[in-house]
Image (cartoon, rainbow, N blue to C red; front, side, top):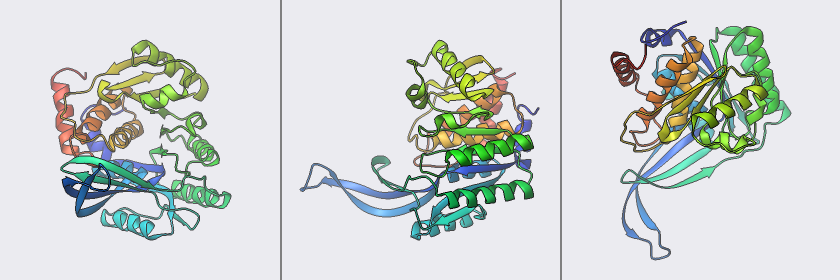
Length: 333
């Protein structure tokens, strides 16, 4: 078991497999100086466009920023945006060997219109139908090939309900992970919420928990403990983390729950914070860190990226300094 600051050095020895929905986060940057005469909406004068890795690719980007080696498996469209996503990966020295191109779907693109650091509008171009049987088979072949060729220390499922993570894919990978004694973690969404049986770490947010529980859930320790018990009874997962936005993060370790509050931050943009929390949690899981330390580190990382505009990866040096401060203040033993 690795704890405290030793983890930051150990990150560099970890190989993490990420499976899920990848996308491009596109930023249309401009300025606003008038209202349209056609409708009561601002007219944005476009000054630039920037494409960034999003979804499961953003999880991989956060892992790389922390020093780990990520292996990304997903399905993209055989289209111009699919080519652009591959170029983004290449520019950041990622391998695209785990990406399948499909003529049956578009590459997901989330376009955000930004003016003066203000998020005005988002337009999504996507296909969300499940993978075909052939696509599922080909994706599982790639995943199995990676597991055979690389020493993988954790498998992360990043689910955005875009169709890549179907029930057959989820079950096949979890069974393979159990056989190989590899810990697994999932950041779930609505469609496959209950498909991740026997996953090691389950990390929904409060909204997702509320949508799935057969009872009302308020962000109180009593309600969250009840929800975590319900999760564990249905999924068999030993660990749960629930992100609570400005209220912090809830953790449950085999029935023992607690809430860790957020640290004071100047919040600019919450986009991508969930990906960052999940990446740090998965990396901590791969090292066998205590769940409370995983939660505290993830909480710090998620708050950090909210201080910057757009989807950005965590800053390892800043995270290590903030974690050191927690240690010096006695918040972590």
